Image (cartoon, rainbow, N blue to C red; front, top):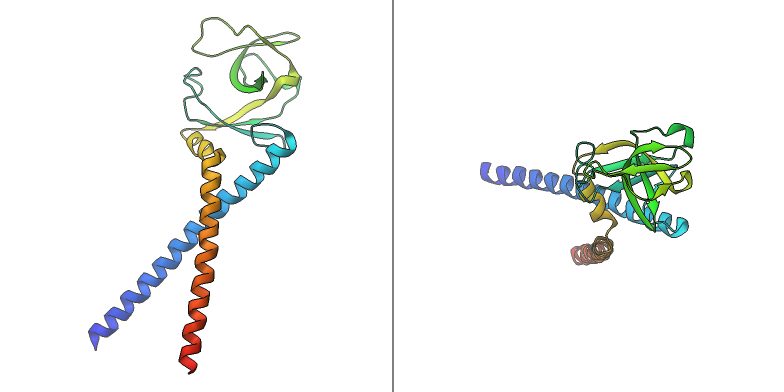
Length: 186
């Protein structure tokens, strides 16, 4: 009798653990799906290759050229700013030839001169306020890898396939449950 009770308790514990795991995975998948949908809508409407909402943009650092301030795979959050809010020494994200760069301002006159920390000379191109995406608010080390994964098309396809599988699995379990209930009635 005691063994039966112990098995029932273990079964209940496993069931609770399974429910918790499913809730956690569902939460993570929901966040990923929401981010992908928002990213897709945002980039389609704004015609930009980066996420931009309410004046905030997110970037991942791809190189170590900004060492001492930013490192490879850092997650960088930038905020839209006006010309008067920018000063020499600020780290900004800006667009040049369709690419976003993150550099430090080394000179400010009518236009901005920027440079990577690892470069001896400043960049050749001069940046106007219209090209500036924003000023760095904060960085989160290594979280840029997650941003790259979330924004990749492969991940989007994976999430879509996973959602189709979950939908199919739920439908399958629902049908099986109905069959079992119908058999019990007979």
